[in-house]
Length: 373
Image 1 (cartoon, rainbow, N blue to C red):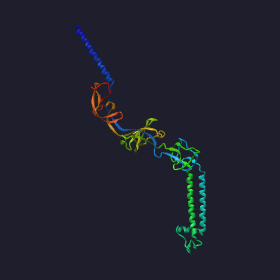
Image 2: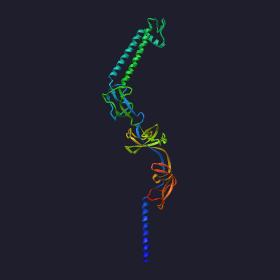
Image 3: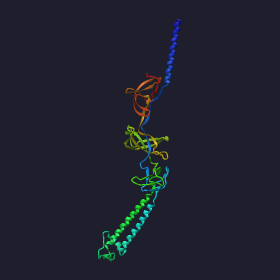
Image 4: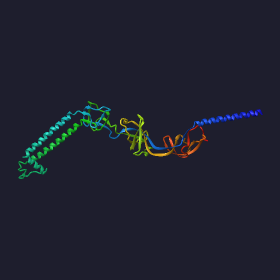
């Protein structure tokens, strides 16, 4: 009997020990569960893209020379601020100034030639005035009373009349040559076509430039107040991008500062690199950026679509798959895990929408060492 009582005692102690160890193990496993509550969120679907800051069309200008010659003065250094019409370079112009002076002298000579031919033909000033009033096709006839004078052919010689017309035409031709010489002289002074910053200098003082079909570039000027973002959107997302959509972006140098913009255009031609198809989406910058952004800065861009409200969301890692079905483990108030089949919808970053199978407030397991019950 003593042996039986001893054996029962030993078995009882063993069973209790096993129960205690099992309970401790379950409590330990339960404490290792990672859970999260199902909650409602407002989700704005968006597209992520990379891009770069670029000058808008017309904000970057290459300034060159329209005439050949030696560069006498260069009033520009990289980083200098220049205003529109500011002189940035001068080409030697003594020969051009001489051509202007020669044309001016020729004009004076032609004006004198007109006066001489008129003096040889018109007997008095009133005769010239009367002729002008008659029109260019009029010619006095012999015996006619013209401007108080009787017309006689020796006095009104037709050849003299044509000489006057020719001298006037010569005067106009010389005047046109003078204007051309002045225009050529103006090309020797190179002015900035826009206000901006000197980005590069391609020619130095003392160099000789030869103008041809392509004007030699002196400097490149960029207006840093006229920048945009070119975002490269994958072909799988480009169908959801529309003009007018809001966008935000950051640059590496200011990772915690968000700049705002709006989609203004989508290039129709794709950009293909290493068999990856992207489309260039132009974003106009709407937030202040003076002194912060520079061309070719790398950008991380988010383009927003429509907002959806009150969606039930859980982390993606809580969702398990079994064939074509999706399910989660829900933790009960007693600490047990129950497998529940769900239907999912929108994927947003690291979260997924629950269409059916769960309600707000349910506790789902995101990581567990315990098996399904």
